[in-house]
Length: 113
Length: 109
Image (cartoon, rainbow over all chains, first blue to last red; front, side, top):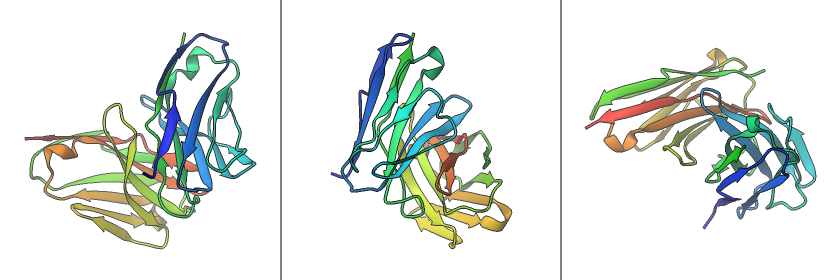
């Protein structure tokens, strides 16, 4: 089944404790991205990747890191999480930004205490 | 920077009505416009994708139009059903994607 998977689905952590949210897609998509969704602000793009080893900042990259060592995986890293990073995070993939639709993962609900 | 606005923020209609959701964007230099549906606590499901060279797309009871020059798109839902209740999001993109804040739709049986 074609899908985007994220892990974990739910995470509660404390300020400053490094964490990684994994994202994987099995559709051989070149374009992958991370979003956060907050009430009243909608979805905002954090980082995106056009292909392996190519990543770019979206609208809200501060406090986040990403890597794209393989085409299928695009982990989101929070080196020192803070309470303002409490949010619902989505990973998405597509063949390319100008091609076809984006497919979204199920989301990761992160709470930083 | 691209800004995407969706009006209305919330809409409640009786079952069977036809309805229109609106999306506007400030920068017409886009590759695509995509409409999504999001159910509470769930991820996003793609409904329709309109490429910048197209004017509309249809899928079942859904029809989406795009007027790139005026920065507007509409999503038309025919004969609404309670199962259509969800939040509807539009997104436009160049290399980056920009989302509206959505329209929360309730269809009353």
